[in-house]
Length: 424
View 1 (cartoon, rainbow, N blue to C red):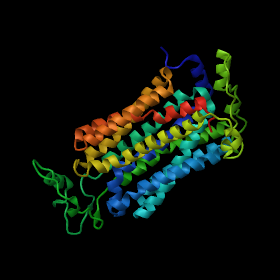
View 2: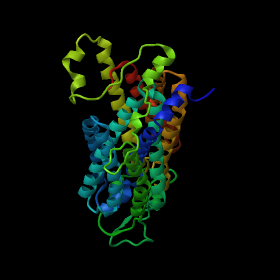
View 3: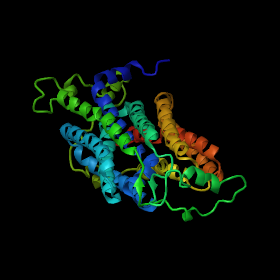
View 4: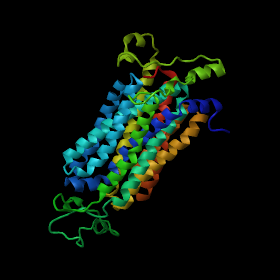
């Protein structure tokens, strides 16, 4: 059985350059969202801050990602503004990667992460919206592929960072030497030896003053270079769309016999098609009271429940990916730095694999069925992680299964709402 039927393949051929560009900007999104977890302790050393202070960069990134998601809606009016925003944001992510090694103060690092978070939010909104505009009722499989590229970028990020992470304490106190008992591996074995009772680790402070021993800067510069082809791809699309002053007379992609997916469905099935939304009008035009009158209760319930599901599951992805590393190196698990760093890679690898599998599953099964199965799996795994919270082995197993279960919720919910709502 073919993965794509002829109609979907024809759609992809018509919009291949736009589609690949939107997929690539989500790779940039994923690259930026996953690096913070495994590098957090090295960044703590670089900024010579406490663990409590450095965790504020998580909040800074996630809060401004929320702000950027809202701001992104302001750029949807025209293709020019949408692609210009994507170009600016993907280029900004590379610049943030390049300047992070220069941020030796936690406040400066938080500002850099705020800029990156805002760029990620704009990318999230625009890329999803533009892809739905292209494929409409047939967007499910292309949305799964779009979110697969988040996982791919998020998988690459920890793998790039891992060789440059410090093996032990990366700030040596002034009265410590590299051969002293500051080695955290020795400290962990002392604290958690056979039959030993874990003590309060606050009596072994992580130094904020002393010689900094970290090479994590190289990881960020490598990621900045890896990300550079993405804004170049957006610029190339703008050139082909004749949106640049020097674009010449090349034909616009959107003017090439661009039948929408709903029109194609009408021709092939003689069914009722939903007209293409132009996207013009006031930012809050979708919330105009005249559009809400006469709506059934299920219309409002779906908005509330769908939003709540995305709120919870996307929050789980962000917080779990960010804090599973610091949870693993803390009591009662006390994993080594390198081993704990693998957790982030395992989580994003399972999300990537889950979204790759969902590209086929969404072709065979309806979005509500995929969402229901995924949510049951997420709830069960979260409960088991709470029960077996002292098991390092189950943390790896649970991380893998959680990534597989939660991977398809966002794109499936987006495709489901597009099927039954006037998506804005």
